[in-house]
Each structure stands twice: as C-alpha cells, then as structure tokens.
Image (cartoon, rainbow, N blue to C red; front, side, top):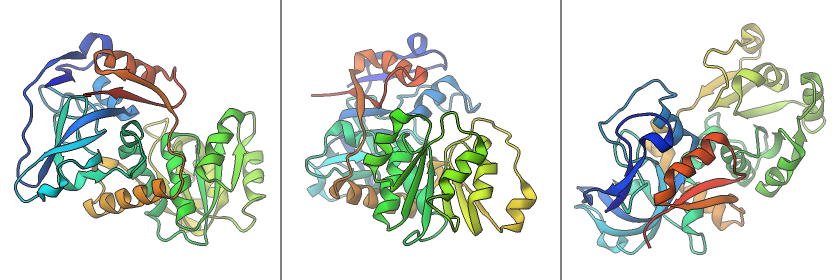
Length: 330
C-alpha cells in the first residue's frame, strides 16, 4: 500500500517519506479501513517534532490518529456486515505505530464509527481527537443540562465541537474567541453568547462574561490554562469545575487558595488515555451532533498524500484557516 512515514523526528520536509509499505491485515476484534481522508491534528505534528519529549515510540511511525474511509475487511469476532460501511476512526496512532496516513489502516472495531449519511470523508477525518476531547471536556464535571458552560477558545477545533456538544446537552453556552473574525465560527457552532477578547484587559473579559452569567459559571472548557486560570477562578460558582486540555506553559502557576475556598474541581485531559467507555459515548454523541444540523468544521485545505509534508507545515505554521486533511486512496 502507499503510505507516509517517518523513522526519526524533525522537520516535515526532512523526515516524512512517501512510498510503499506492507498492507496490514486485521486481527481479532479489529477492522481494516480503506482510507479516503486523513486528518492532521496539532498533536500529530508535535509527535513528529518530539514536543512532548517522549522520543520515537516505535522505529517507524505512519502518522495521524484520525481518518475516514470504508471498512473493507474485518477480523475474527467482528460482524462481516460491517464490510462496506463508511466509517470515521480515532486513536489509530495512539500507542500504535501505524496511523491513517496510508491507503489502509487497522484499528479496534470500536474505534471505527459509522459515518452518518451525507457527511464527507474529509469531515469525518477531523472528528477524532478534537471531538472526543471536546465531549470529555464538556461532560467530565457532570451533567450540564440547565447549567452555564464557558468554552474558552470557541473558534478552535475542540472549542467548536465543545460548543455544539454542550448546547446539544442542554447547557447555556458562553464562548470566548480571540478576534472578531472568529465570532462567526463560535456562533455557527451553537454558542448563545460570544465574547471577543482581543485588546481586553482580564477585568473586562470577566465583566463581559458575567453580563451573560450573572450568577457565575458552572463549568469551563479550557484551552489556555496558563493564561486563563485566574479569570476562570473569578467566574466559577462554588463547586464549579474546569476541564483543561491545553496550556501555553508546561508549569503554570495557579491561585491555589481561591480555588480551594470555592471547592473547584480541576480535570486535566489527555485524549489518548480516556476510559474506553468515555470514548464510545463521545463517538455516539458526535454522530448525534452531526445528525442534528451541526455545521462541522471548515476544511481549509485537502492535499494529496504525496504532499503530506506541506500539510504538516500548514498545521505547524498555522498558515491555513480551518482544518487540514490529506487525501488518500480513491
């Protein structure tokens, strides 16, 4: 099969190769997907550049955890009726060497999810990491129906999905975005109220959010823990919660005693290690979201597998608005 891979970490143009690799076969409980589109996530480029400091987990890595295509073969214990099913997958390169940047990928059957009718392979290939992270971030603190949920960074991939999932679950959704141009994305995703934080002092950000949540915020989905934790503490109700999935500083300081006196629950989220049950629940909710008129992601660029280095550069350098996917197969 045709695939992209790297055998050492570094710049995309220096380490990514495209060529022929052995075609995988599904084992017991697994399915094989003929990949049509492979999503490029920030985590994929961070693994390639060793930004997590874990080194090469395998001697050879086919990148990308998320993808979409058609199930063409199943292993023992999997219903043959799944052959021919349009599917999106997640976690293909989580604790496994071979991801979706290839004509075929093998994953455990539960990680291949039916792709709803009318949803493109490109859209399906963008769901996994951001969608499952978003679902966990929204729900890890408990039910959100009738509660106020703040999504920090609502124009991002996780943020947009978190907005849609929180609204689907019955929350009042307030979102922040960095710039006026990002407002439309957060609004389209389903936010009831959007606050543009560009050029605003922290006190003004708090004031603008409190205008829509005068009694405080119940739960916060946080993309910039290091920058926003003091704002978050001010906004949270007694017993509120924060679900943080990213930070700009690996060692952020926190207002410890104010968080303690409010009995705030902090949840730190790493998507590779969510419980299996949480991932399955997230996948079901994401399909419900797509089937309930959620607009999905703006696909900023779709490039052929031969040009995967360029796709990685687009994500790494943030030169493209919207998601970046790699076109694979036919």
